[in-house]
Image 1: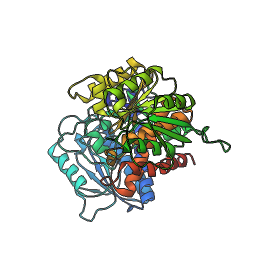
Image 2: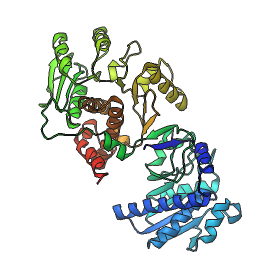
Image 3: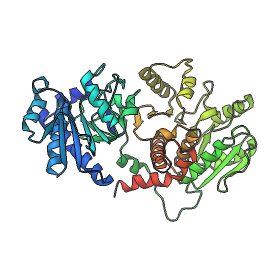
Image 4: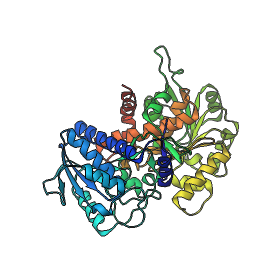
Length: 479
């Protein structure tokens, strides 16, 4: 089941109707925080020393539960209270009275290892106080990895706005569900990698959105038979590339092959220079294209194609008569086109604004809502590329892809995604799971590429080189 994405108010209501007490939920939350911290320490051989910043709310209580469990696991703990006992929530006070470890007012210059951020909870709005801002500044400047509980302190859990200063978390443990503020505005820049910690609560209302789990993604992977031949592995054709943009079709074609496609044939409308040995490339010819589309399992349109009147005429004709699964990107995303129902569109923000026929940018929540309505109205699957990527489809709860790296903000990564989704379609994956799986593998490959090259140095072709690693990450998750 997908990880739920909710507002802080929705989470509060879910907790109110839970069949267990608030104290039990706090113990579950703290146990999850401790488990993530221990796994992190073991996996990356971090010092067995943790500084825990305890605020006055229930998030501080979660942190104290984690502190007690970490101490039992032989981790040296440094607890710092940032509020007086009498100013703290009742559950926070309960946990403070139970915690018997050492308490300090400041951490020493020699402090190392993890910091656990238990300063501000999901109810935070506005601007942080001067004292809390000082602690946030010290944590951010320490150079130490930071684990935030629920969301980084200083981030508004509803809007993603930052109240002057906020924790730059390396990881965030989302308690029960991901808070929407982690995915909006500056929230995404502060949240780091998200891990969802389950709670024993029912969800009486539908979440705003969901994030795919590794188990779900593994179930979507196309099955590979030992006896298959290249056409059974998927035959994908594309109309992409021009003299002005010769690289885009090559990125899409190679990405498709690295995503398991058996054969890729690309028709291009101008000279695109030397092409990869494994990708069949030929100049546009309507008769040849018509022949091959009858044999192909899937189609991609748009990368590097250009937007001349002639190109648009060809695209209109293709879209009008299209009968195989398709992924449509870049220059094929024009508001005057009628797209076949069920097709996958992969616009970035600017292209989505063009499809919506909005001249100026708009409020984040309004923009996402309009994109969702547009997808439903036209019966299309929209993969809205960004940081993070959102996916909208008729009769589906919106999906957010909670992975990726800032180094992916470079020319060509969208062309890679187009080829990947096209490859999955050609292998028989249905359009909606192909969109979710393709976008997820794309984001994970970006993270793998960043580990080798760094965010500043990676380029689009690095994602293709690390697609095997992305598949390995998913397959390893079930072993």
